[in-house]
Length: 480
Image 1 (tube, rainbow, N blue to C red):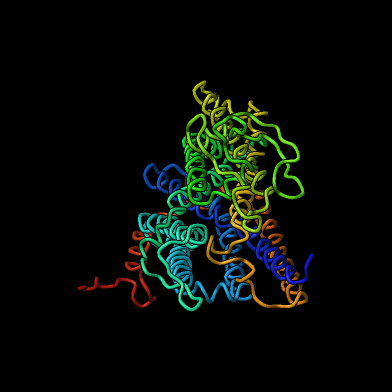
Image 2: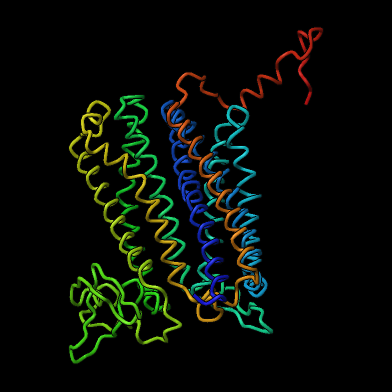
């Protein structure tokens, strides 16, 4: 390998490690906050204590996960300036402001209401606490939106011009609502919900298998399983939409995701077959071997039998992304999507048969075991999806405009390795601590004995009417 390639490789490796560990946390925070709002809403409306117990139990998981997301998120933003200094300077007029909006959303809006959500039980009214939980869910979704706006702009940069090496925003609406974000943000938001549903389903199934707190976790399990049906189906639809967007705006990326090298030829010598499995040759000019289904790629990407899908060989060699990660990452995403949809249909079938009731659900042990294992699948899908997205964009840091080699900081190999080592140690420490606390919470289970808080307004009113001093045993009501 040529010496000057090492800083690019190490910077990509370093930042790839940071994002791989960081992305474990925000999806669960975003989705679980929404599910907590639903659980608390059910408690406020029905007065059923099971919903309160579920809300307080899963809230503990949210708190630990949120803290880990903040710690690794701050590290990731710091890494932009350290590892990608020239990129940060060039895109600052747009990127800096968008990340500033995300900071306001996450560290002011979300952090303010999460404090009220955690410490407000019994101190504010039920409706005010529900309002705080709603705002935690809403602000976390806004935070994700700004991150996806920034990353999508790197995929399909619009609304900017370059002057003296700096990106100047000419059309804010075009830059914010770029072609990629139209599907990328809904796709990620639904992924967060799907992942959180899978976590709730997995933990609930674990308790059902152990026959612990069955009446409480049966409710969480049944409702989460039913909601998973439309969410899993919607995610498949949005994934198809993302593929169409990539096919339109990032043709080399689509070619890498499909291992597609030769563009369709009307004479029939080349058709747009879909490769189930394949591996590129050493020159990245074709596949060394492939298992192919004819014409399916055209059907997927153009919705026609012989639609044109541009192959990798239509682009310059130094503009082509690496194939294996996007190719297999995409297939893992598809497999996970249909696996989650299949699990949801299994649950729907049992629900129609009346088998998800508290009296019968524990008898379906293979179904519950599959449900426990399902929590890992959305995490895997988020991981490989992000790798596909970032590796597929290479060799560009801003697609088609700024190469990654031009955006990395000018550090020595020793400095790059030092930062990589520090980030590895820090991220593993956060991951290990988070896993230990989450494990402990799940092992201990929900608190089923503490008193249910009443309405905070009533409690405050009782305190105001209570005697404050011994010599004031019969206070005169205040004229106020």
